[in-house]
Length: 94
Image (cartoon, rainbow, N blue to C red; front, side):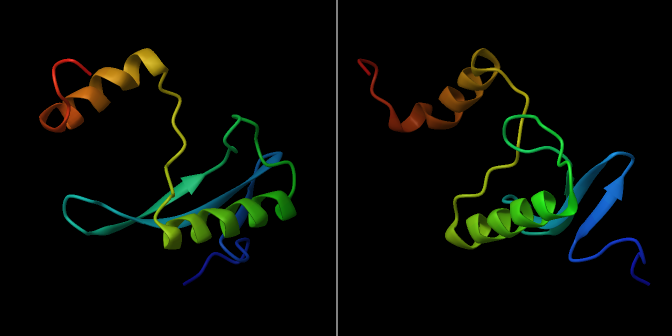
């Protein structure tokens, strides 16, 4: 049964709003729901309209293949992981 407080995939949580989208796991292809409560700059959604707009943009990015989950990882934390995933295609002099 759907949550009566949720409308268009958006729900109020305390003084801010959050939205839900389905994300496919690249390894297994299984879908899971992911709640997102902050925009890319780390600011909470102040009203329903902001959250609905962000959800629409996230869904459009998913369809375009450009969606990336928000993360609080720093560049120093991310780069070793990125390099390990790209190592086979990068020449030693790069």
